Every structure is written in structure tokens, then in C-alpha cells.
Image (cartoon, rainbow, N blue to C red):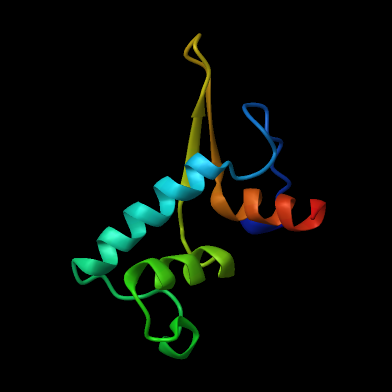
Length: 93
């Protein structure tokens, strides 16, 4: 079993990407793209739009290698791969 096939148990927070996490990811990735970072998806998929549109396309395709750190007030935290949150929310939709 490869690391991508493992089932992630989400113990902290909701089992989906929150609107705040989504906004933070899109903003950070759009900033990276505006500073010259190469897109992680083919240029045809980005529709040659703004950096926000490219970041949205990357997020929706699951191409971003990002983990979300969710913390509780007592200091307990969990790092959740973005792909796990996208996979769970696509199955619940």
C-alpha cells in the first residue's frame, strides 16, 4: 500500500475543507504564482486567466502538495493532506 492509498482519519475539525482554509490556500498559491512560481497543472487547463483562476484550477484538480494543520486550544493538532480533504468532500457531495 503506497502512502497515497492510506485512509486518513480526521480527528480535528470537519471532514471537509472549510471556506477559511480554502481562502487561505487560494490566496497563498495566487501570491506564489504572481511572484513567478510555475503552475502545477498544464497551461491549457489554466485558461490563461488571472493567478486566482489558476490557483482555483490547481486546487480543484488536487495538484497542490499542501497539508492543513488543524489545532485545538489544548495544543493538540493534526496535519491533514489537502488531497484527503478534497477526496472526502467529493464523496460526500
